[in-house]
Image (cartoon, rainbow, N blue to C red; front, top):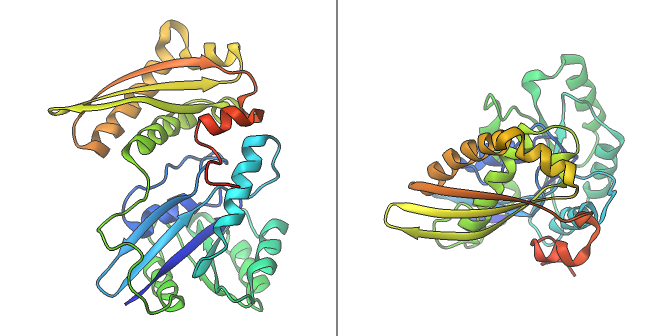
Amino acid sequence: MRAGIVAVIGRANAGKSTLVNVLVGEKVSIVSPKPQTTRDRILGVLTEKDYQIVFEDTPGIYKADNALNAVMQKTAERAAKDVDAVLLVVDAHAGLSETDRRLVKKYAGKEIPLMVALSKTDISAEETLIAAVRALKDEKAELVPVSARKGTNVKELKKVLVSLLPEREPVFSQPVVSDKSERFMLGEIMREKILLKFDKEIPHGVAVIVHTFKTEGGVAEVGVDIVCEKPNHKAILIGKGGRAMKEAASFAREDMEKFLGRKVFLTTYVRVKEDWRNRPALLGEYGYGKSET
């Protein structure tokens, strides 16, 4: 069979996680309209009878402005090494950027095959899409326009990716769809709901730590700390009478129950750790950059 690892890279908010979820057929990465949603390297595994593709979903590439973002950028760069192919996701709706051009130049024509997916074609202006295709046609990369939301050309994308992979034994012998633990995914579900509910900088200054995860019978007990950087951010997260956090937690609990297949008793605590995104000790404590050297 054909099998291998595909690093999925691209600008922040290019649609990488949404595309990976559609390709794998399961939700392995959280999604939101905000950049910086993905903070970790997350594997999504698609296994069929004659091939296996292991997708490495990575943080979006952009200028790092704090220690957490620097760790995320290092994670994205390292993911594109020691893989069998690179899938660069370009937001066709926003148009080809200088960052996109730089990434194409960096990876095209190398030993590792490069494939470019022009995403969000369902909402892209025709002239913007055509301009991107023309700009990329002479590069040494496979090119497929796709819409993850509509499913347009997703099968073609899989077909081309499989053709780039070597003949080998599967990377994962067991039937898995992700390398992340249930505890990790529960924290990501909570963070996704915060990203969707709250505006501006507050969601990006939040870390979610699952300190309790116990299952007994048909119920899971989940306790999370929601860490923010400022006391006024804590007040906004909690909301008047605790209403804002109760609403976010309610949505998170529903998704946690779907994910675990059982009832969830969820408790949330909002705590302040000033400037935690620039404090290496706290970054390590919260699980960021542990695999980086």
